[in-house]
Length: 114
Length: 110
Image (cartoon, rainbow over all chains, first blue to last red; front, top):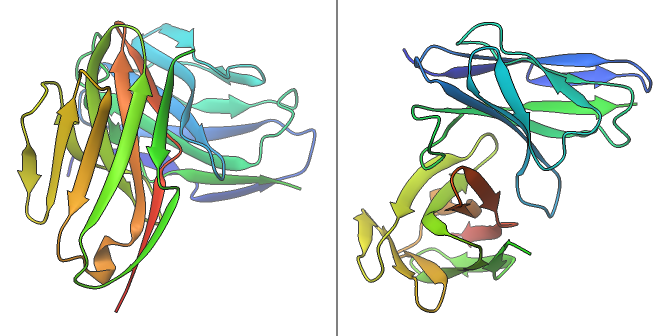
């Protein structure tokens, strides 16, 4: 079945460690996105990529890094520079890189930094 | 500042009630408005609205957009406990910007 997968579902890390969240899609979508969700707030865009080997910062990119070496993969690294990394992270993809109208979401990764 | 505001923040109803969720927005170069339902995991897509006054319907859910007054409503009739979720509104604007509201938490009790 086509879809978006994120792993792991839950992740615990010690403060000061970098951690990488996986996002894979087999929908043949060109565009991929990373969001974080905090209690009482809407989804906020971290990074997005419209094509392989290219990505742009979203609204809250500080303390995060991404790569897009393959069309189907868009991993997100939460670095030790991210001041408040505990959150729910959602990855999404869309067919048309020029349009964010219909995005398909993965199941999410809940990151807790101890 | 571009923003999307949803109301109410939280709603508690009994099964069978009808609810109306609101989403207002202020953005430049509006393109479309999206409604999502989020249960315990990732949001699932409900509707995309681009034209004023045209109702979108799916079962007991319906939604309409007013581009003059800059808002949309999501109606759920004959609510069921399975409708309990956070309902997110998102607006696409400029070429490729997307902004979400904070959501409305709906709880339906039997």
